[in-house]
Each structure stands twice: as structure tokens, then as C-alpha cells.
Amino acid sequence: MDYSRQQRRSRRGCIFSLIALCLVVGIGIVGYGVSRSQIQTSPGCPSGKLVLNMYYGSEKEAWINDVVSDYNSHNSSACINAVPIGSGQSMQEIVDGSIQPDIWSPAGSVWLALLNSMWQQKHGSNLIGTGANDAPSLLTSPVVIAMWKPEAEALGWPNKAIGWADIAALSTNPRGWAAYGHPELGAFKFGHTHPGYSNSGLDAVIAENYAAVGKVRGLTATDVADPKTRSFVTNVESSIIHYGDSTGFFADKMFSKGPSYLSATVMYESLVVQANDGKTYPHLAYPVVAIYPKEGTFYSDHPFVIPQASWVTSAKRVEALKFRDFLLAAAQQKKALQYGFRPANLNVALGAPVDTAHGVDPKQPNTLLQIPPADVINAIQSSWNEQRRRVDVMLILDRSGSMGVSIGDISKIDGAKQGLTEFVNLLSDDDQLGLTEFSDSADVLSPVSPLGSKRQGLLNTINGITADGNTRLFDTISEQVQALKGLQTRDIKAVVVLTDGVDNQSQISIDQLVSQITPSGEDAGNGIKVFTIAYGSDADVDGLTKIANAAGGQEYSGTPQNIRQVYLQISEFF
Image: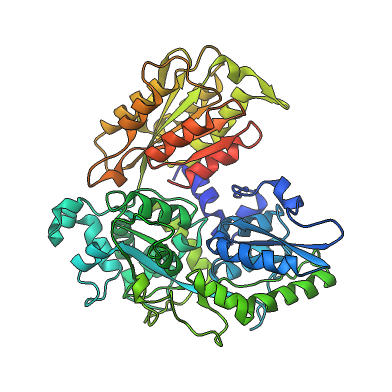
């Protein structure tokens, strides 16, 4: 394996790696959703109060916002500053020292052993206690496969148990849904988040490996390396439309865009409840149902952790324990139920809306999987990096004259080139990548083609880009989306465009562009995704958001200071 590919795998897999290399050479995942400025601030906490910084899995954000507001409003001496963040991301930032939580609540307990193992490698001790009461669950929600009800019924639901083997068969059947009597549904379009950053994605990939070998516990690295296991996981992954760092993002895209965008997605039972409540998505195409994989699944159990760290003072520990008791009290647990979660407090009865009327089965899951040891999770992650669906990406860079302006100690064009370099180094040799620059006109500096043989040449090309001219944005996006449509591959296809201004040179309007790039038909989910970066304060944020939403991508805000992190975050979709 060449060094560049090994480097990419090391960076993507570092949060699972228990070997010293990740920690010694410092190849880690920097913060994506939380800036360092957020770490030091405490919005809503008045001066004079003891502030506890809580970093928690964003899946429970609505509930946390509710209960934290209540707690803070009735507490005269202390204040909880709660920051939503991806579970894998927060784990890595704790290890590298970017954040120092007084309270940590990832989405699942799978992250606890991983963090302890990495902390042991770096500091020689555990950061999290291993006693029975050191990480109690705040609430639970099974990890499920959310599917449109007519599609689930086509597979035999609810009379037939459905699982990962069915997903693998659907993913590889060239007839797609036609093989199940529904040609109007097109191909099977599947989604789960990136297992390096998101709890549901990690649980999904572990479950795929378990299903491949027919086990529910005792999964080994040998099992993961078995060619049959690798083939099974590859088959499931072949229908992925993209990855990502947010389970909520998938839920929103699936429920707002309908079956043509996604057939099914790995998510939490609570999100299925939300989909069917008639409020969040009032124009849902069909009801959504939760599939509890017959081979087994996990609970997302949202542990409450007070780190065994020097920054957690005795006063903070006392307050954290008070807050934990508050969260587990009946009143807050009943609120959790209303948000679609199962209460951790067993004195609070499970009931509506966790019921069949909301597409879920409170009697499920029947089979729970054992969380594997950290070394096996590391093997799963490394294997997945080889089995994931490949990508064809065209990078588009605005090099207009305004890109030469400096913000702080770096020009916008130099910052952008650093971000592009970061992105190029994250892709594998067998991904396909291209580069286009634009100002008064567009120049394809490198067509979309296999990256391995041209990586260094492409990096040299990026380094030589200079700023000059106007902003031909819309025409350039249109041309490159059309070019990607002409590529005869089964890869994920995407355009990533950075611009710092407003279009002043194109022949087409933004409405015409949006019409061109909006996928249609039964396989819209496999359309070209467009990710946009509004670079600096003069960029057309509204227009770029409109473009990204139309094409199933996402808009980001960037500066020369954070642009590397922005490109890193976009890479999580691939």
C-alpha cells in the first residue's frame, strides 16, 4: 500500500486506532462542528455562576435544550453550558485536548472503551470510570433501519423479519425494487452516517459485520478480515448515496425529499417517531416504519459521564451529580418520552408516542448485539475504509480578484489552497477527483479521473493557482454537474464549490441553475450532490444554500482560518 493511501486510512481510522502511531505523530481529527471559541464561552450562563461544560451527542439536542433551560432557570449557583457535537468527533477532541468536558454524553457506550483505550495510550490511565454507576444511561433509542412503509411491505414487513441480508440483496439486485414488484421505485437507495464520526454509522457497520458471520457476540478481528465478511459489507455499502456526520441530516433529507431520494436509512427509533408525528414533516410522502434488523442491533444508550480529570473540580463533580439526578428524575424522563426516546428511569412507563401508530414497535428489538472490544472496532473501521462506496468529485475554486485579499495573516486564495490540499490528501487512490478554477471563464485544470497516479501533480497545480478576474459561478457549476453526469461509473458523484462573491459573469440565472441540478425521477438520490462553501462575508450565502439544498448537498461558511476544517467536514460525506 502506498504511503498516501495509508495516511488517508490512518487519518480516517485514527479515532479507533489504539496503536501509538496515531497519538505519537498527531494524525487526528480536528474539530468540525465546534470551534475553539465555543469551548471557552458559555452562552446563556451569567457571570458569577459555576459553569459546567457539557458535550453531548446531537441526537438528543431538542430534549437537552428543554431540560437544560429548565435546570439553569431554577439554579442560582451553577449553569450548564451544553454543546451538541458528534460522538466520534468529541471523543477525538477530548484525546487531543481541544475540549475538556465536565460532562460528556455521547450517543452510545461504544465510545467509552475507545476513549479509555486512547487515553491509556497517551496518559497511562482511564479517563472514564468502569464501575456500574460511572456512566448511567440517560435515555435509550434502538438503532433501526428507517424505511418507507410501502417499501417495507414489499419486503414482507410486518409479517417477515427483515435484516441486513435483505439490505445486501436489495443493494446488489440490478432490477432494484422491480424485483419486488415496484419498478416505479427504481433502485434501492440506502444511507448511513460515517462510522468515524457518528454513532449510528459506527453501530451500522459493526452490525453489518456481525450479520455477515451470523454472530450476536464474540466478533473477532479474524471474522472482520474474512473475505465473506468483506464481500457482505461491500454489498450493503454499494447502495449508499453518500455518508455524513449527522444522523439528523439523513433524516431530514429522507423525510423531506421522499422515496426518490432515499429508500432507507440507519437512524434512531426516536427519529422515526418524529417523522410520523405529523408536525415536523407535515407533507411526508408515506408513513415511515422502523426495521429492527433480525440479526440484531444496538441501543443508543446516551451514557452520562463525569470524566476522571484534573479539570473537573470537586465543586463541579458535585454539581454534575445533581444535574444527573435531575435528568433521571421522572419529570425529565417523561419529556424524553415525548421526544421519542425510551426513558432510562424504569419507573417511567413506556408509552405513546413510542408505539405502532408512530411506526415503531416498543416490544423490539428482540436481539441485541455485544459491543466488540476496541481492537475489533478498529479492524472494522480499517476494513470499512476499503469497502465503502467510492466517489467521483469535482473541486471548483473561485480564483477571482477578491480572493487575493488577506483576512488576518493569510490571503483568501492561500487559505483555500490549504483546504483543497487537505481534501485531496483525504481521498483514496482509487477515488476519482478533478479540479476546476474560475474567474471570467472556467478552466478544467484536471478532469475527474483516478487520483492515485496524479495526486502529487494535482497538489502542485493547486499550489500554483493565483487570484484575478470576475465571478463566473453559475455557468461553472452547471458545466461540471453535466460533465459528471456523463461519467459511466457507479460511484457517489459530487461537486464541491468554493466562492467568496456574487456571480457577475454567468449566462444562466440561479433559478435556471437550480432547475438544471435538481435531481428528478425515481433515482433522484443518486443525483449529483453539490456542496457549497460561502467563503467570507461577501459570499452569496442565500444563493449557495439554495444551490446545495436543490442538489441534495449542504452549504458551509468558511474563512481562511477554518477552511481546512470545512473541507474535512465535507469529506465525511465520502
